[in-house]
Image 1 (cartoon, rainbow, N blue to C red):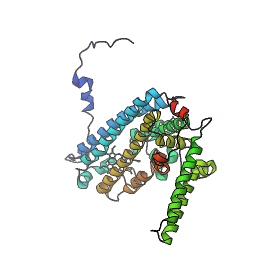
Image 2: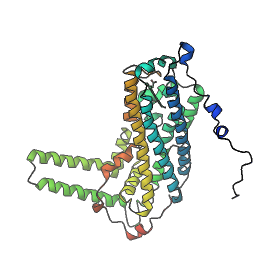
Image 3: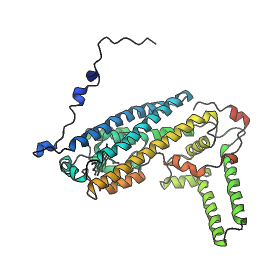
Image 4: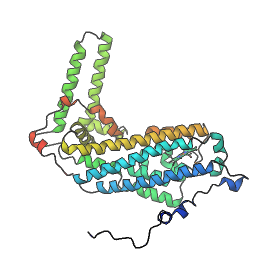
Length: 365
Ligand code: HEM
């Protein structure tokens, strides 16, 4: 590696940051149509531009993470970098969520001073936002019905082609799924995690059932209710152990991630104290945080939109607040990682790993 060279031309703050172009890029349109420019339009532009800048940084981090995962195997030595970059995305998301409060200093009446000049532009056309969604794994198939086609119809040809092409590229959801599927410790010659875990679950539910059957503080109605509840819990676990049950749920759209990768994620979560699993566990944890903060942003934006335009339709032609509420509910990335908690059992009930497996828990997948 060659040593870093000394800079030959002196660097100047405003040139380095290209501030002439950058600060010349806030151009309110209201002044073109009415005598006086709407005061709050500047804030509206700057807040959106600040978002787009941070989207650019998120994409920069996200693409580098995708590049690391988009290999046949991911060496452990990259785990730290992945965690650090996911963490950076998370910190940016927190700023993005807070930023909504600045825009909320604009009142609905102030917004009406320029809103109509924006039609038909809309957040739908934020290509970087859609790019982040697609790269995280929210491809067309998984969007709500209105969202599937409508936003594509509102884009120019170049942007539409660009995003449609991106839909075909590797996304983080698919790459994480294959990474989890490659988890090497699930099945060993003398140890099957799936079997050991299934019997630990069985024992736990059977023991709970015995308690419910025999305690004297439950009325007969309550006892029956609890017994049914436990049986339902057990039935819910079946999908994990029986491919057919799993396939049915997947075909009904209730599950997306493969059974094998969910088992891998459960294994990592249960044995996260093992040195080899500490970082994979943090990767999964950070991914749930990214999803959670995205969902929080959608919710904050939806409520702000409700306050700003009530039940009016959006400038992009959606049902506005109503459409956005549905995307908040539906447009998630790593739902299965949240549902994992259903399948966790207390540390004290965990099947003991064979010694040889514990020793081997330094790995590269
Ligand atoms: C006065 C403030 C705002 C209002 C009234 C508003 C309104 C809306 C509405 C009604 C939609 C649904 C699509 C449509 O019919 O147009 C939408 C979508 C969107 N807005 Fe906003 N918005 C505001 C501020 C922002 C800000 C500051 C951002 C930051 C980038 C933003 C980003 C988006 C994005 C990315 C979408 C697409 C969401 C999706 O399809 O899931 N909006 N907005």
